[in-house]
Image (cartoon, rainbow, N blue to C red):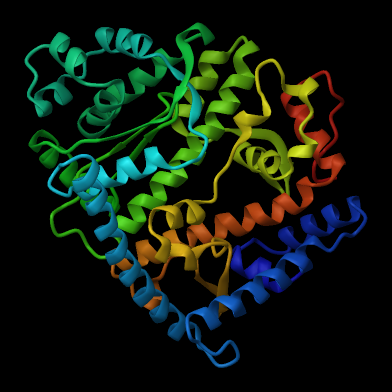
Length: 414
């Protein structure tokens, strides 16, 4: 087991080392950890050369500062590109958020999802009026708001203005939903651009440093207005997180489709609305996120067994797009960030992330080297490691056993 993985992931030892050793033994010692580490080091050297740095003589702080300069320049180019798209196709005074929504809708990536019908959501809202949201948006009656606002906009306004008690009551009502309340449709990406949303979104955007609200149960993403003087990196962070949300909605959608036959379907919807779904199986002493299964089948399509998933899930439901690749389709100068989501250089047992989301968030939060974040890199590296073991038939069958009880259970980490 390589020390690079343990330190990069900030894994608890000796538990991580022991779990990885068990997994290696169970699958014939494929040395997946060593192979992954070698690939990361080689790819890192290539990226350093692309940045004009010497792979053998670049300090972690030099790398961090170079990445900050790179993301700053890329963010400026991306902002200009999105403003041009808005002015050309939407005519909203070159609004960068409108351009972002247009660019994502135009991408050639899978966007079909399994989501709550607008009529079913609005039936819930009629019984649980979001009075604070109505006031914030200037509506005097619930009927008027339901007529003029989409389900996603109503939920976005409620999340920003309603109390925690109201939001818990909404989730409780999800328990009564059934598959007949759902339909297959395209993921919606909408933007709130008028003055009503400016004040409502201001505090949230200032705190998060991005403007993305995602609702997997609705199959929808709402982009809030960015401030006129948004910090450098905010546009890149928002675009990357929106594309990340599209993937997460696709994964949650597939999981909900699979669970249609469960008697506790409503409880599953409630859970998915709160956090990404996980399987009961474990891998390296952690539960397996469903999106890992989604990524596995998107990458290894020949392992998809129709008889296990159909009629509820088809192979096209299990699509997954690379965030950096999608960003490069919108602004070609972002090509540099492709395949860097799981790359980093270690410094005093702490990673210097080359993940574009980490880089953008570090920039727009003006974080110094000593306070840098690397959470998106760590999650990506973890998923890459797990995917190496999910290639094995024994692991695949164990994961499928969690989804379909008629299959014998085999512990993933045995």
